View 1 (spheres, rainbow, N blue to C red):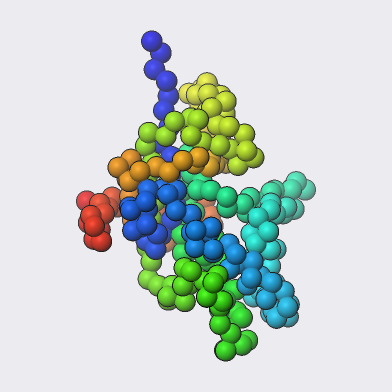
View 2 (tube, one colour):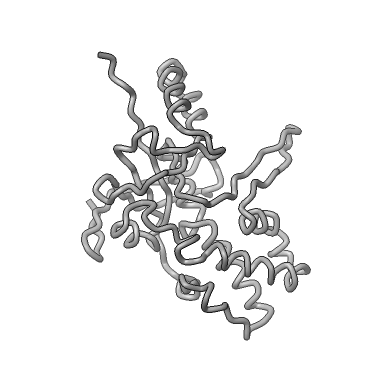
Length: 247
């Protein structure tokens, strides 16, 4: 019987979310909804549109902020004349097919979550203009003020044992057809082309993955996480209770 190629998946986050993932599994809680972080970003973006339209730091991130608040794609013209669409939908927990993609996300997003990062960024800008500005308690369930100067570590999670039908493509298409196609073509591709092909594929988890099927790695990096040649290292960590041990 022909052996079927299996895939491991990778998710980049930060130490902010480590205890929650240990307790609830990956995807067991989505802070964007369970803690109203998305609603908070919508509120902050609305305030920013009134108060920060002359603030260049806000204008630099305005398009991404509004796309994220409205949960839409962002069309960005590229130098070659083509248009690249960035997915700013956060309706679930997304995983990548390569360590590199997960590591870049973890290192690029200081707080391990785009929505949390943008909430904090816009909150700081509004606070600079209005020192008396306070967040509505009914939206600030995550209490983002405690993370303004939080010393976090980027975390890479390796996920094992995910079935094909437990995944969905970013466009809503079910994953089995895509994964079966990859099983056919990946063994035939040169190493570089294989890497490039896998870098651009993300999946949404359709059910939480329990802690027992997760491996955790703490990341260290030097070069900019925006570049493909990110210089990074990873160290396996073993969370036990409220403590984390390096292996």
